[in-house]
Image (spheres, rainbow, N blue to C red):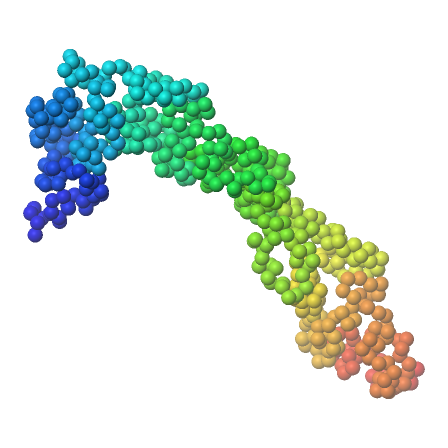
Length: 529
């Protein structure tokens, strides 16, 4: 059981919440390593920053006598007791001796305080020899020249190096007062607020403003390290943006036409929602796409489904070869009809033979309406339909797809279903007779409608493939003895069979009509003939 019912002992209790690394570096502050956190901090509450039991200087003075000669000699003769100890030293642990912070200004690291300050025995030893940047340029002469650029960061222009840098030591690279990013926001507060978006550029997310901006001076606007895409290529692989066909903004090196370099509520830090971003340049296309039927990628605002936004080795910035592109989404349609009859255009990936790739006022983005789209290739069918007296109703109405799958089918003729079932889906009255009548003509029973009928057009009523007995003799041998006998040896080669027989179904044997002439019914044809 721990004292005061604590759940841990000493510093171990603090490390339940506080990360241990900053407190366990090579050089540790004696109170931390031997006595514990509560030598300097109050465990519950305090009137002082970081729960200290007193001001920072008074806390340090509890153990360190600032007036002792040893202390003064340790600070190269300077009486620094009134200064802030933590401007040079870390209060917990350090990788450097004497608990100096991780990044040390070179004069301090070499114990050369007099490089910047008046001598220790002077009237004002802690005052600096020169004010502002003039003091810094005493050593950093090359920077004074380097900072003479067209665009200079305000603190540099004002000679105020200490607005960003510590003159002694900090835990931040380049002896900056705060980490990169956090330091910038100490002045650019409104900028930090504007970066509070759903999608943030990686350097901003990592608080690395200096990945793009020179913190001192540049010949480029906004103190950028490089111009245009050259700046972007510092991080982004150049290859993806330098293929043979390059999007115009990239070609001009102007990435920020489309992207916000800092943050956006749109994916990829786009300035606008994807398709709206595209329309800022492609206004003509926006007008052309305002149609009744719009290709799904455009309708959902995803131009990049088909086009590369940067560069590609294909025309129109297509992400894949034209004949393969559609199958990125529509591969299932091709798989369904493999092994059957496939529309040649579809099989070759020549989808634009029939469809507009973006938008159309016709169903399925067809280039022309219904049959006109088909007749662009099937000119023979169009011409023949006009020359024949009788046209199949779907053909006459321009509904080719009432029977045919325009892409393909595993059924001969690119039909939607087997022939008989397909015909009966419209000819429902005939279907009912086939279902209930006792006697059925074999082609009707087997669903082989094209034994007797033409599928598209003919000059014979009923779309019959031939006239009278000449149609029937395709299956029936008119000279066969049984057939001759059953017709009382009367010649029937020039007859019209449907004068006596039903063409599809009948309740009477021999498919005879329902109502029969009495002599004919009794088999006495010779009574009249």
